[in-house]
Amino acid sequence: MIKQVGDTLIRDRHKSTCHCGSVELLLTLPDGIVNPRRCDCSICRRKGAVVASVKLDQIEIIKGAELLTLYQFNTHTAKHYFCSRCGIYTHHQRRSHPDEYGYNVACLEGVNPFLIEGVALNDGVNHPADRAG
Image 1 (spheres, helix red, strand yellow):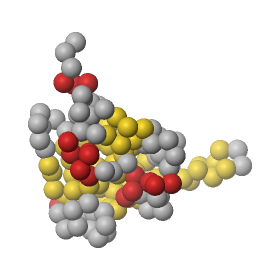
Image 2 (cartoon, rainbow, N blue to C red; image 1 turned 180 degrees about the horizontal axis):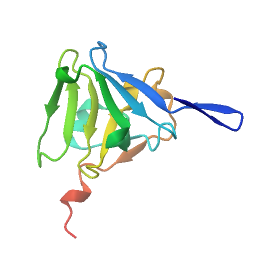
Image 3 (tube, helix red, strand yellow; image 1 turned 60 degrees about the vertical axis):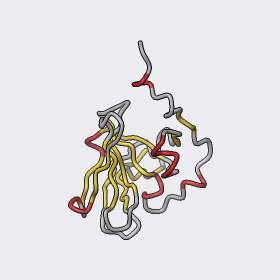
């Protein structure tokens, strides 16, 4: 869907794919990529992805749902999804905000995450859900 804001056309639906194209997602991003970040928890350090988040109803799997592999660890709260063919991480249901999906910004068509300035680093080693109080 494309909407008009003043003289600017804004696309709020964006296609996201794994590397081999077997998995396709449709994301609703009315405000674009909001709060892009990296995390230093054990899995994020290894995958190195820049992620942003959307509400659960803002991601629709339009192709390849049967090819997504679920990976969980530690508290088994977060749900990390990968393409079983090419291994690319596409998205995850967040541990700290289970009403949101984190998505791999690099999977968005036409987006180079290395060109995004000001990508924050989240302290996933000291996750808020692991802190008392």
